[in-house]
Image (tube, rainbow over all chains, first blue to last red; front, side, top):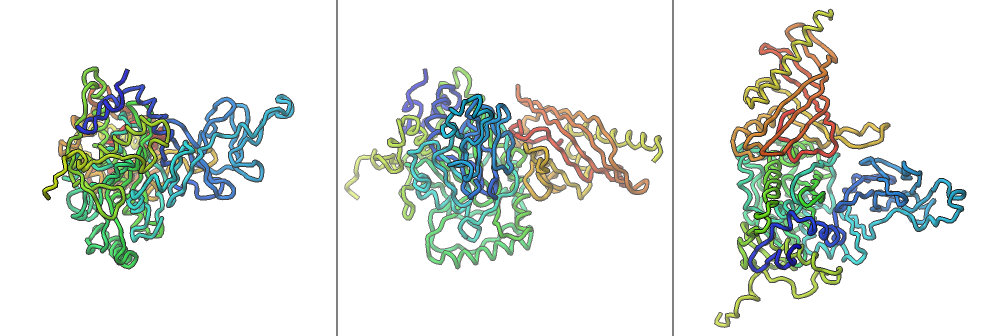
Length: 463
Length: 175
């Protein structure tokens, strides 16, 4: 028997039990209480660019078909024949009006002229004869995700009809996701996916990844080797161009999201050279900077390096500009996916340089990311032991030192080096695990956490 | 090309592959860089499950995503990273063996002393690290070698791995 959730996540002490990274029962609960409820990233719209295009994706441990019907609407359908369970689509991608099961021939149509709702059962061999016309085809369409949202060319879905609207689920974290999905000059949704998704298996619990990307600047030492060698696109050492001095960690305690980035600002800082190894690319970013100044004027804007949307999607907004998803396979294994983005209308030289840089940075062959895999895998492995699984991980750094923040609703600012965002992530995880339904965890509901520590401290009326 | 010339050339290139494998398996990475042409391209595309009639099984070189798609500069950085001795994915070092087989010559161009030869082989790269971590990188390898004053140099390598989802947590070995 595992401990109650509040003993696994000891919030006031910053402790997280290793059981949540290795235990089979907790993993099974996670699949239903986290993955079957939350909004999950399923695809980039470029993967289903034309009507009839489809791409196979994952939600938790289920395989789904993401498809654009003949009217251009996106559907997320469980990829299993309702008759006898055969994996209906065994291709990764393609274009099809109809999915026919290779086992007994049941077929499902994406054409609204043939079926009432795309994904419904269209053809059953022997329907009139063997079934005597008695099988009601309307009852046996593909199981569909009830909630689907196409947001700035990304596709998200939830299995829970009661989930909040996607934008409420994001809260003001939306600004930071926008930074990655908007063009470099801030043009809404100006992003294009470079063809092909990196998919690889990692013997790590899935939570190590979103925890890392939510705000772990402390692990910089992991990447000392690539920093020494230098893949900085302006040349020299380091793995990225210089980042703004205002960079900090920002977290959303009631939502479970967090980011390493800049708090909202109202004036574009001076242009800093970037991608300087290629003069044409450098010039593109110089122009981008001018367009940002014109677009935003004195309005609110943000920028960011890495962040996590609870539970299993993380993204890099600057260098590299990528999306990542962490699919659970077992308590101690995940499948990691990476998508690379560029401005849709950028010159080819800008796209080429970004693609090469993304590849040298990210993925199993990336000079940066390969070292993360080693850490997450062997941290998982060494939490399996009978004694080691009984102890806690330490997330004490900066406990009680979060600060309130202006211009960003529901957010706290925690400083560059802190484990506040990881605490926020595990706190939200605990809320999902304890909740009976979305009613208990609806964004903004209840008193919520107080990571600033003010509630716990006795009031000092002398100031 | 006469039969004898073809046998000699095949012997030459396969011996070159075996020497390269020895250099990599015995971790003499600085020596390996000397086998590369300055304009080398090293390409390992992604593989997708697609209908037989489609030509989208592999991602495209210098256009799409890939496991690796790079030239000498980045390959040299990979070597330098290993040699920092703090590249944790290869520290302590993996045990790696390259098996190269089924080599056939696809084409030969140019005059003796400046020939360019294209070959196709099968590769089996076995990686074992720490206690029980085992990875198999198996696939088809298409190599283009050019003759220079310093012997044959690798000008172009494409590896078609026989995996769509990479069943390895990291790709820190050269294939």
